[in-house]
Each structure stands twice: as structure tokens, then as C-alpha cells.
Length: 189
Image (cartoon, rainbow, N blue to C red; front, side):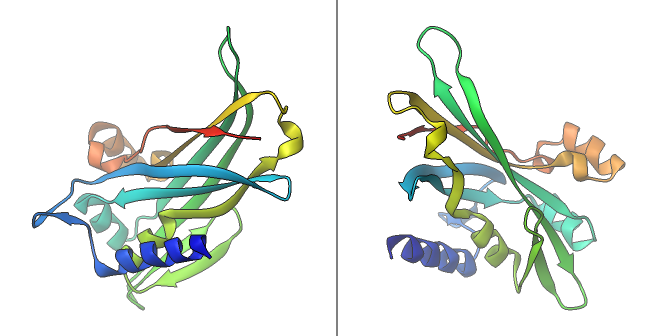
């Protein structure tokens, strides 16, 4: 029940509007607010929350027919004492955001499952993307009981999906390529 309540609160906050501090809008950017994993029926599951603020240029591009692809990259690593960590598995959750001017709706396409949702506002779409709830990561049989494991997660715009002229701009202007950087959390098998 607690996870559903958290999801509903985040969704409602996203519907209220863009976040503001003392009357000023926050700078565009992506961040991982939190990430934690639990084991349910021998499967490690992830709950994560993101802060997502698009730049005005990206919103304008979206409203002019450019698709935005978002990637959530996840790694599960085994911490080793005297050598570098080894990667157990990597996962990628991919989304595509588009705007439909005829219906004045924003469309979210989950590229992994091909499930498509429509939203009346960009804020409501981003509120849904900003919550990763009960996401299955891996089977606990892949983890040794005495091992030390950690996960890393990031969310970013896939600039390779832009048309070539915009792709070049994304390498020059920071507001065209938003990335949270890696966020690390400990994983208990």
C-alpha cells in the first residue's frame, strides 16, 4: 500500500506544475532522487525516483515534431575487496516521448514493452516517468549469500536518437543532453 501511495503523491505533484523555488523555475536537468531494492519471491526489485526538468529548447523541439528518447540504465555489480568491481548484469529501460498537435496530447511509448500512453500535459507525462516502481532486476540465485553487491542507476536523454543537426547541437549545448550521472545504492541479497 505504501508504494502505491508514494506513486499517487508523485503523480499529483507532477500534475500541479513545474517545480519552483521562491518563484523561480529550477534549471533544466535530470537527477536520481532515490533508489532502493527489495527482494520479493526470490526476485530483486527496484524502486527509484527521478527529478526531470526539460530545457525550453527541448520542449520547443518536442512540440515541433522531434521525439525525445529517455534511457534508464541500471547495473548490478559485485564489490570485490582488492580488485575492481565486476558487473553481474546491466538493464536498460527506454522511453520515447512525442507530441501530437492534433489532439494536443503528449505520448509516452515504452520502447521495451511497446505500451503507449497519452497525457494531457508534459508535466503529467514526466511525473509518470519519474517513478520506477517494483521493477524486476534479477533472480537472487545469481547473488552469493556472503557477497557484497551494489546497484547503479542513471537516466539520460539518448542524444544518438536526435536527427544529425540536433545531435551535433547536443554535444555543444548542455541543455540538449540531460543526464543524471550514476547513483549508487547497496544491494542486499
